[in-house]
Length: 480
View 1 (cartoon, rainbow, N blue to C red):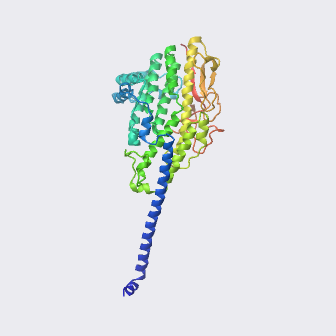
View 2 (view 1 turned 90 degrees about the vertical axis):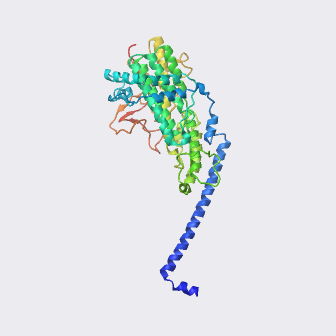
View 3 (view 1 turned 180 degrees about the horizontal axis):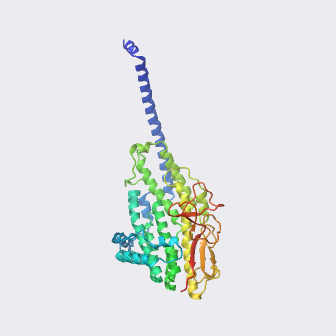
């Protein structure tokens, strides 16, 4: 009787019923397959993390903190840096260009090796006077030998970005003071200001994920440019020059690239623990909920765990490359092709170029300080860099892109210390930005696109519609 009733139902209803049941079966089967795949991939990730742990490398925020030296709060410079940043007054009255975006470097970029006009000098004076207390706190921080600062990387990238805004403002303020003092011919005071800028970058150490690493490089690059301005226009004393040389050497930290990759991997592992809903927690996952926590369903994406696994393998490869000596590290970073798109692996090779350029600039400035010390003692320039050994250094700093000594050119008007840069081509020491017809690519070094050759071709940097061929410093020979 029931069979007869079923058979009497319209054909379209019977077909729809079968489609419904088949759909339910397919959905259930799909969820089951996806769950099995995700469980398998999660277990693979767990094993990879456990493998990393067995090497003694950090996999949690707690691991990172345990690797850092203990700092007594009584001698922690960070409290003065934070106080100085809190005291910065970004705007003075209603004057035009009175905020932190006003700085001498913008003026000097338009016409290298020239002093700002009296109007800009007067504006700078008023701005610095308004921020005198902030500058005193930043200078006080530079006197301490230790620094442990909190950048809130545990709370996610949003919180970290808010923290990074403050030191960038402080770097601009210190840069303005350094160049203002140099323009007045106050060399020793200008050196003290540059040293404050260099030492303030310690606040990024210990929590150096990629974004904090790049901000540190930016702040250091500003300080290096200020140092060259100070050398050219203010002629600091031998004692102050020696202090500046020592401070510059302290910022020459090739291992920062490795530390950044280690910290970035920890951050991503913690992030993965938040977006992968598994029955058991990741062996490296902490209880700290990152704001980047994704909706639960997002963690079921079939390719996400595979991307995470590829990411961990990629980062291991990058770490292996970063631990090599320069310039081998540069070639190793450029030759490796990441397999996944999880995290920031696609930009790490480009970051290595920027980091290498910054090392080249730091070492070139350091040699320029040695040359100025030699010039002060002998009344002339050294004929070759080896003349600086051993009175001012035990060895000439290495060009990070060649592994050889930095290059040196001089004439009756100026001298240049430089690296050939990432194109490995000596362009004659052209280190000032040169006008070009190309469209500006935005602030900071222009990096070649992924897949471009690391050598054998000229890759110029484009900044604000200008290019440079080599990386280093040029100092004009002004009368003392």
